Length: 71
Image (cartoon, rainbow, N blue to C red):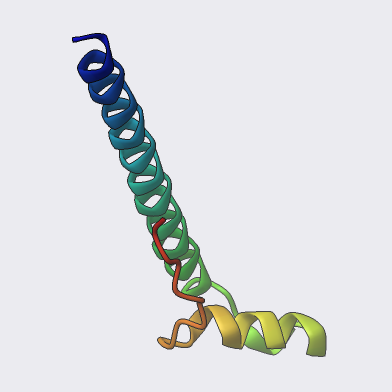
């Protein structure tokens, strides 16, 4: 009985961790969308060359993120 209880508790903790991870990913995606919205208001003509690189990266639709594997 105690083994079963311990197993359920571990499963619950793993489930909480995956929910937390999912919330962090969703928050990060929202942040990226927010940044892209801000990029629309920028005038690229006033940027320095290094700022222009960042501008182009944010404006591009391609995402260069590495896939995360779940354990």
